[in-house]
Amino acid sequence: MSSHPDLPSFITQELAFEGARVDAHAREAARSRGVAWSGLGPEPWRPRSAAQVEASARARLERLQAWRASAAGRFLAAVASAQRAAETAHVAGEAARAAVARGMDHGANSCRQAADALEAEGRALLAAARAARRALALRDAG
Image 1 (cartoon, helix red, strand yellow):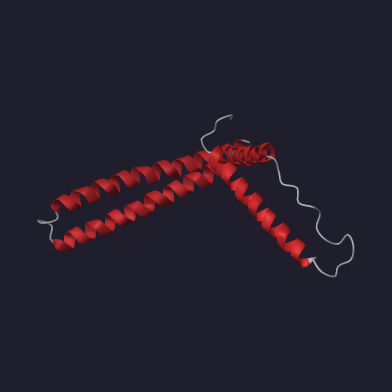
Image 2: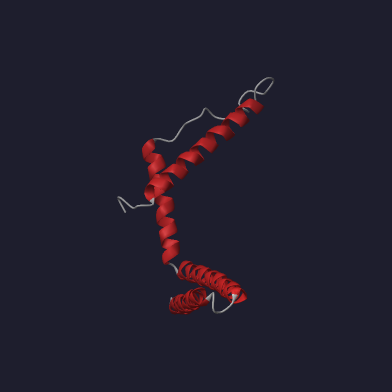
């Protein structure tokens, strides 16, 4: 995974996390200013090195990839794919209704396009449902 395409975005997220840690530390340090008992303030700030940030990003990416490869990850990906296909099919159905409302003769091309889209999304929905079944079978086998 030395050059995974998602690694730069994970490093960017880690740097944002690091910035949030700096802010949280600054707030905690501000709370302990003034009259405070010795030793009650936060420890001195120790930023992570670039290597530590990258290692943390790589570890998060590896955990995500492992989850995506798991039965639960595959199942939810298939469900999300099915939902996208269903939403797109719904939009195509609404386009077909609008075309008919304009008149079948004037909207014949729109009706054909909507029917094509409905058929394609139906196939995608079926494929996603089958992928969900395979993910469940993977879980049951494991």
